[in-house]
Length: 224
Image (cartoon, rainbow, N blue to C red; front, side):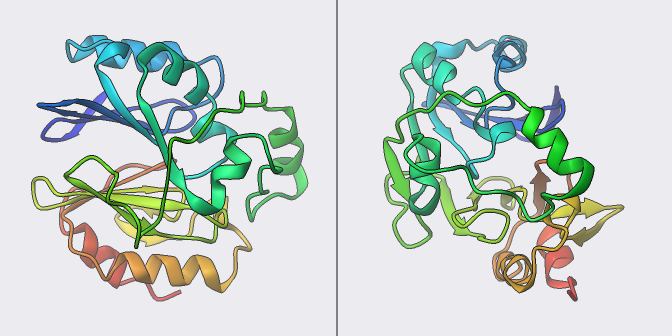
């Protein structure tokens, strides 16, 4: 586990999940692959917390590597689950999970071999214009492209921390669409440029290292 900002910790693996520790409890952002809840539990223990301290679970989108542990962690914690309006049905099992833009070739085979997530009820379907139910220091940023309802989250702490999910990636300090968005088209680029309209010092990503200084400027420098 890595501390990326004040009270914000990254739990690594195939995909990053994040713990946001605060006075009211812990907010978990993304939940990793199925049957990997132990990584979350170990991360909580490392900061003196347990699953019962989780007060909210936020998922950036409906892919298995981001919602795989959601049902189990929600059951263990009693926390409310938040996700975008447009990805809610897929998370709840009422619609197919949308394929990522790079779903082709060897990657298509690998994704089909991944374990399936347990469907789980979304307590709060949110969007950028309807996010008042989120914990008080977090706001939603609509970033469709990787999935129709992909959502990033902005934390008002230490100059701003943006949880990018799979909307983009960090390549040696430069913001790029990243391999999950290969062939994603103009909507991916539009979402990256939209992120650059916000101010934040740190950006953390689903599949790459964080940008820890002047992160919003890195998004504004994106030229795709």
